[in-house]
Figure 1 (spheres, rainbow, N blue to C red):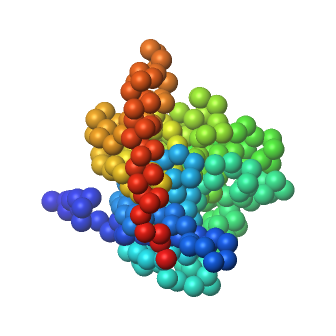
Figure 2 (figure 1 turned 120 degrees about the vertical axis):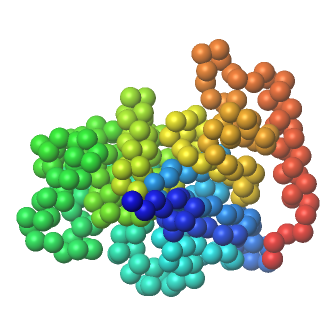
Figure 3 (figure 1 turned 90 degrees about the horizontal axis):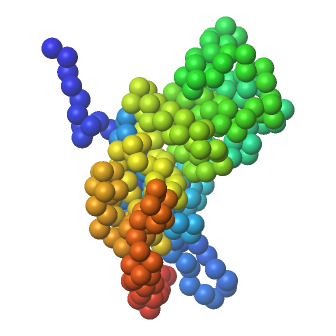
Amino acid sequence: MNDVVTPALRVPALEVSDLSVSYGTALGSHPVQVLHGVSIVVRPGEVVGLIGETGSGKTTLARAVLGLTEAQSGEVKIAGDTVSGLGRRQYRAFRRTGAVQYVFQDPLRSLDPDFTVARSIAEGVDQRDKPNQAERDRRVREALDLVGLDQDLANRLPAELSGGQRQRVAIARAMAVQPQLLICDEPVSALDAASKIYVLELLRDLAREKNVGILLITHDLGSLAGIADEVVVLYHGDVVEAGPAADVLLAPVHPYTRLLLASVPTLRGESLPAVERARLRAVLDQSVADANTSTPVI
């Protein structure tokens, strides 16, 4: 009989516990707290959507997970290894294991314009495994197949590819080192509609087939439908709603989540009347005003 490992018993690809991050301000003023005790779990084979408007703290959370921003409190574990509190040199050594990979919004930021597709994909493989040429070429071919790209693109430069193809190359490069956690920061916001659907479905399939945990950061709640297993809603640095994607998308509880859903275009136009949207916005504005009158973070 085959042993079945339930998701609850697997070591999470990412476990963020009670994470708080503050940024310093001008001399003599109080620091600004950007994240307030945020907790998130991403399990192997699971896509977790992290959603919020610009300034909600999404990118700060990603930077803290990647060791680029120091947290004031809380803990970050990647594939069971505690990485919060590591020095930059120690974290760079951990990153070289390939356990966590990052996919940018714009692949032109992450793909060297002078590197061919094959060289870009092989770069991480070379750093981690130092394979011989035959093994290197095999890993590149497998990575291209994994994201549905033709082998004849291997010798092309990024400028010769479409936006959707470039993003798939970025994903192929990340997956070539067999990560346990993939962080995708607005990976489809710069793509056309057809490429957007393809890339989102590709990420869902990679999570299932390769058992990789994916944290999908976005401002578009609609893009998570049919893709995400769990949804976490971030508002002014607080998790205001979290749960199975179907529950959050079909029966949102928090006013902010309802506003995000109201912004998703439908065949009938806006999903909430203007009066209701205004009421929800007033509730949110009052909650921010109440928070701003509380004791500042020191």
